[in-house]
Length: 285
Image 1 (cartoon, rainbow, N blue to C red):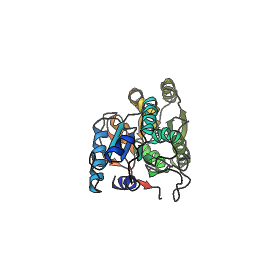
Image 2: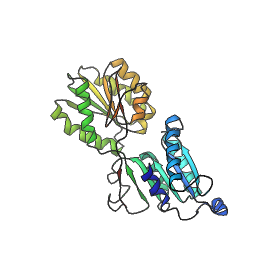
Image 3: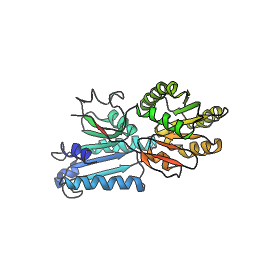
Image 4: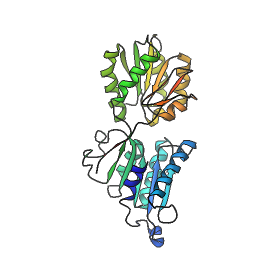
């Protein structure tokens, strides 16, 4: 968190927002795909603590405009537009959907991102060494982590022979994770099936079709569509009595399961391995 705050504070030389100019206080926007819940508030407290360690205090020498809007793409786009119109000194963008929305609206306001995978593949930066433009930040994981998810499924269910990757094909991160799973599948002795869903109504039929045969497990790729419909996915998995791996800790938490934190997470109806963040890789400036 300290590295993210450091990247944010460095460019804040003076106010951009008109109302803030009167008080001579720069405005820093925070737009997050996280919900305004206990987890989101805990991260916000850490963010504020890191700011204070660098001598920046909200309401004194910096003004935070915080918007934790969840995974609803309509809310994300609306809040992104409002934030850009306010013309803050810079913006912290949390999550790929947030960064996509902001990139479409401004090429001048400095943006620092977090919880975004492979920003080069996503077209957000030119390269990790030289991002270029107005965007830089910190990645959440590399695609190769998905091969570990296959290993975890095998560990939980040794008789596993088939793996469904539930993904939104419009999400470049999901496509990258699918490639990693497809490469790991033959080495683990499992068949990999791509379960592509673009709308919520496609989720149940895809899972039901896969569940007709035994020996299956599911890898759930991170995506806002997936997150919004996680309760449905959990219920379907419970009916099917299958095993699944989720790439984001809060996805596992939505299944009401608890377990150790590690590089990857898996859920086997009752026992749970809670997927969490890995050490972030910086996009160097």
